[in-house]
Length: 137
Image (cartoon, rainbow, N blue to C red; front, top):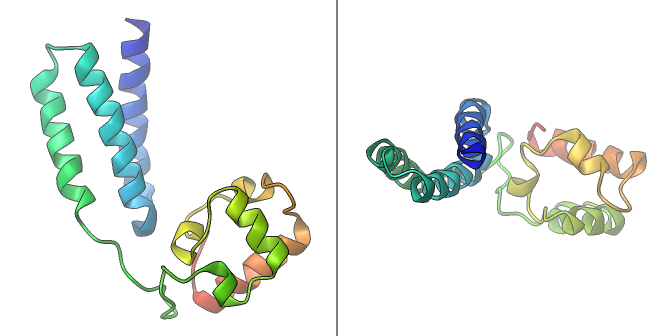
């Protein structure tokens, strides 16, 4: 029963997060909610109909495409290295799974600072890139 409570809390948190999530990260957040709802459905049969509705809604929203370009007109699919980010900063971003401008959009400042080889200088390069592209963390 404890695990069920944790899953329900995770779903609630996911929906609260979804409301404040930037459009670029929306699909990833919805995918996480979907996975949690599916896991919860497996654990609790009486809530099946409610969870089926949540799952169906998430699956519909996953198919909504996020915007293709940043506010300054840069494609979100642009690789960070192609946008002039130095190799050290690019390598640090790759180590935490951030390869494109779209991946970078909406990432928390502290998540960046935790990357191996990423420090104040690299953050300065990222801030310059964000200013240039119009993307906000």
